[in-house]
Length: 232
Image (tube, rainbow, N blue to C red):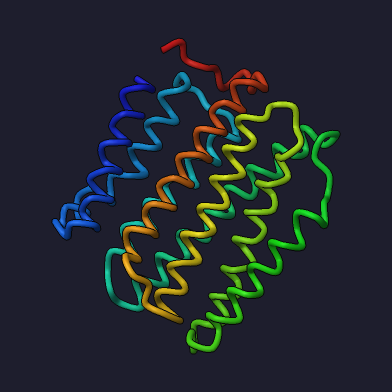
């Protein structure tokens, strides 16, 4: 079943991206399906029972789905709701990454070399976004700090023994940040060419890489007895 849902996620993603390139309008159907299918891909990797860390992943994808649906509307209210949903999704990922860091603390230590360029990136992004955000300035700053923490806590996975899943998580988090950045730039600073396509391309890639990395990480670390890999 894992492979079936992985293939289905690929199909839905292609429909979503093609809709933005060709203007077919099918994204009205594909966008709300993206995160539920990715969630099924994650759940299909395990049996029915869950652990705390798997539930954090479920929360992140559920909030992401709610954010996707909210941002399909053009009103300011729906934008704020979508922003809030994605902020909660990032918080769920942050708790997940911190939890996993504490379980492998000998291999993941605080690093200014990681944090400093990320801080510079977020400060540069805020420099462009805040002047045009008006009353949304405070939420934009809060959201910027949140994605900074998510990006950094994900990147602390670098240097552990299992290279593949860690790099998958790190790259996925970076793509998620880039997608969020383009949403902000497109709304508050400058209309980007093919913005919807680029935003969804980086968002889809980021979410998949994070989830796929976490699946492999959970399997490698022999998760709690409440979570066991499925043989399929």
